[in-house]
Amino acid sequence: MDEELNTTYVTLDGYIEVNKYRYVYFCIIFTLYIIIICSNSTIMYVIWIHKNLHEPMYIFIAALLLNCLLYSTTIYPKLLIDFLSEKQVVSYSACLFQFFIFYTLGSSEFFLLAAMAYDRYVAICKPLEYPTIMNKTTVSIFLVVSWLIPAFHIAVQAIGSAEATLCNFNLKGIFCNNAVYTLQCVRSRLIIVFGVVALIDLIILPLLFIVFTYTNIFIISYQSCKEVRKKAAETCLPHLLVLISISCLSIYDVSIARVESDFPKTARLLMTLQIVLYHPLFNPFIYGLKMKEISKQLKRFFCHARIITVSY
Image (cartoon, rainbow, N blue to C red; front, top):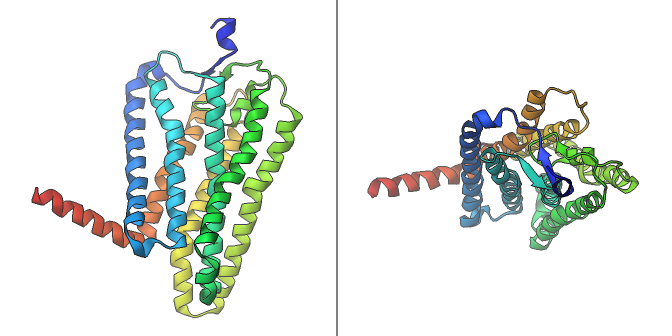
């Protein structure tokens, strides 16, 4: 690359033998992307068309699945283009935009899970006050906060990175995550300080709130009747599984940007693929199988679709 191109473009250096296996990679990723779109969209559609699912818990689930859909769309189309390209490059501005969307949506999941935890707390621990507390206004505020606060935090880091001087133009990854910091000659104090603030505000505080909320739910459920314990288990378990999933993948992502340069390329690629493959597929299956009302409506939906197909 010439000097002018180097000031604009970054090479994605995380691929392994892409020239040899480009069509294999393309077919696998394209198939998974279609599955992600179909699985997430189907559950969102089922929630949308059934009025009995127009409750705060299911609205938050639909928002979480929309997040997964947008999250995947931020990554997968670029991956598919790269597999068919001779050179895997991206402009630095597009890289930072992908960075911004990726971390905004990723961080908003913790806020949405915190909103779900609060919703379950009110439903189980204060059932008589539930309609008053979890009204449309409350749900709307939770949704707006879940997307705006992460967007503000990540925007500061993206803008700070845009003004940084680059000394390296090879990104050790297949998309733009926090490994973009390794491209900078010197990471500014603003990025370092605000990175710590973002970690506390976007991950640690929501996690502490979720743990505190579910601890109270389990204590009250344990002291209550069997019916309350059953309700708590049925509605809280899927949220906890998703929380564990996104937490583990967040640890993966933080680790990727901080491992040494001699870290095996294959292992790095596998860790990165965990982030983009596992979670968007995990969420719809968890909520589709574990949430009783959603599972029931999905069975009706597919039975109805099968009847229509057979009749034609």
